[in-house]
Image (cartoon, rainbow, N blue to C red; front, top):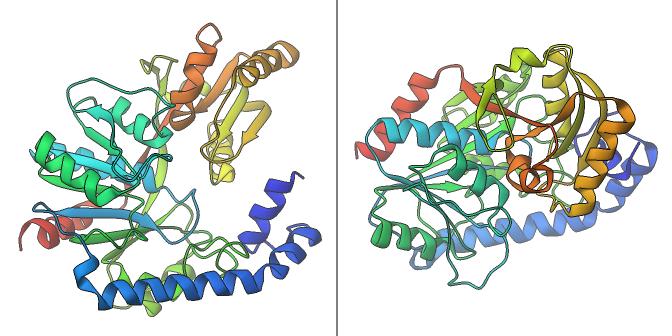
Length: 361
């Protein structure tokens, strides 16, 4: 088992995780406790000093999470912006992106079909802009400034703050928190000892909670007991379309049945992707795992092409997020991209809650 897999399993509280990974995360417990205290202090400071919170003249909806990646946050953002566009709104997705100076703003998608490649654009931002050519997507480290620019210069009438639950400097009208249904809090510890970005008590700030993936009834009941007044919804990722390297539709995911593939992914939760491929009866010859938001180089492209030749695979299969960075490296290789979408079980009620809380006040 790789070091990364071992740590991920220990963070999730998996009893079958290697002993060394459990010992390592346990030794990091004091650091996690200190970080949790610091995050709680930061939250109380923002709550006490309302003057430090920037407010823009249009509604802001935050889609965030309590744990590190792999919860289905970005597919939930995609679900929301599609709903907003169909309602006649002009949403702008605002996210942090990678690096840059405080006042730097990167226009990843201008809403008119002009797109920025990844890199330099962040992979999830580039993926959203590529999927919806009429969507504004802007990134920058100072998200209050980015949101202001989206409104004043691009005419956005609603901001969707991607990964915004911990970004307290920008006022939001609604906080939706996305949690994994099978492991919402992992081992219950804060990074680096666990998967949590802040203590579980922070969940009480949410206006709605979305549990994604496999969700035991007991898990939902326990979370609902902890936050009895906060609406809770369930959803799951579903394979939607098979794409080529240019993002063109090449058919249904059902066509993957029996295919021999080389898989490459850089995900926070690679297990979920593997389970989906298993459900589609895909024969995975080898899975090249990279860290979340991996930066692919030419050597990686060569490695993947070599894997096809060695295994006799039919093609390389990757995620839509990874494809925005891999496609230029694999322009002459057989590449397929699996697009997934978030299916929310009671989406009419969630959409109605957003409408009421954000647009009816």
